[in-house]
Structure formats: structure tokens, C-alpha cells
Length: 100
Image 1 (cartoon, rainbow, N blue to C red):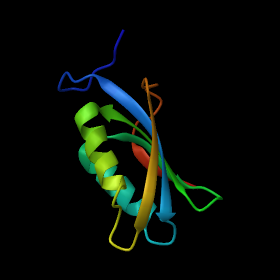
Image 2 (image 1 turned 90 degrees about the vertical axis):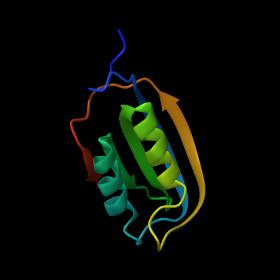
Image 3 (image 1 turned 180 degrees about the vertical axis):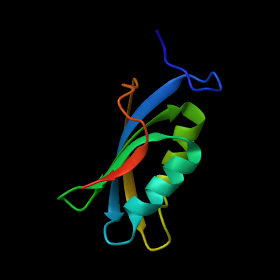
Image 4 (image 1 turned 60 degrees about the vertical axis):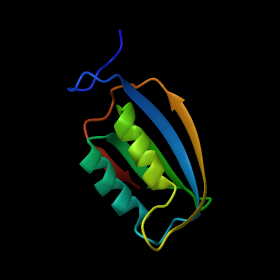
């Protein structure tokens, strides 16, 4: 059984690791704002190696728009690379949050 968005679009999931100057520039805050605006669920968090991890679930179009935004990030960020793994949604999220 596939999961669908309210619009009937099949839900997907990705895990992205964002590299570059992405900590200390409000990356998590703006990612949460962007994800919520797109109706995406999941989380964003800083990692000890200086990268940012994003796990997101939603319709494919919304996820691709979020992923596109992650390649640039907020104005003070300098994204050098985004590693992405796609997979099936788990349905474990009810909103998009910043994790610590």
C-alpha cells in the first residue's frame, strides 16, 4: 500500500546531509520554515561534524522544492554539497521540527 498526500500524490522520503558553512547561520530555522510552508514533515539537526541533516517526508514535488532550497540555504550559508538518499516514507512525523 502506498501512502498519498491529501492531493493524491504519492508520499516519499529523503535524508540529506548538507555540507559547507551551514551551522551558525540559522540554517535549521529557515529549513523548518521552508519545510512547513511546503507541507513537509520531518526534522533538521546539526551534526557534530559541522554538517546539517534533514529528514523529510511529503509529496515528491514539495520534497524536490525543499531539496532545491537546501542546495542554497539561507543568505549567510555557503552550501558546498548535498548528499541525498531517497526511500519510502515511514509516516512517523506529524510536523517538521528542529532537533538538538
